[in-house]
Length: 94
Image 1 (cartoon, helix red, strand yellow):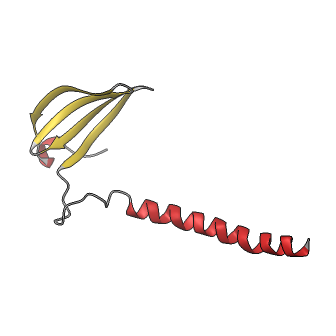
Image 2: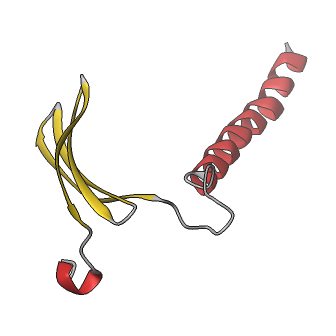
């Protein structure tokens, strides 16, 4: 019985620490895979707006264009395209 409690007191904090470390590492590495060598991504999410629990609008910037899409459980639907705005046209972020 003593051996079981000793193993439990040693291994349980060790396992919890490994889980915590894996979560911290995953959070740190998130978004770094698939990035080209220059470090600049070709696709950026400019803005998202939740319309309902299952429906969202998103503006995606891709190769100098802004693409408006609707996302739902059924997938993505293209709603419109426009040339990408510069940062001065967008205005201040609130």
